[in-house]
Length: 134
Image (tube, rainbow, N blue to C red; front, side, top):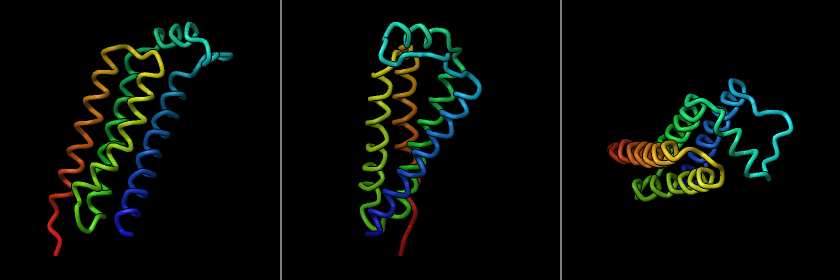
């Protein structure tokens, strides 16, 4: 039960981090009115007008979300900490990859975000699972 609570808490925290960062990005770089997400051409044209800072905000949120998911679930699991940390990071990593490959992000951002999300998640799991428990 403790492990499930840890995974749920980790995922809720990660989702909140991503949503808050998306809100910040939308506040700084708002979407054009009437943007049709079903039209690949409109979406691609809008993505090309965004500055690099908009993508960096998204990348930071994915990295922090992955780190917090790995850390929280590893810290709260009583046993098999690394396993439950990796499960949480994987649950975050998969939707991030779907998000990256669904929309027309620049290639540099897809590669960087994939690396940062995986690395930060791994670091979170390692820090959370290294704690000694009696």
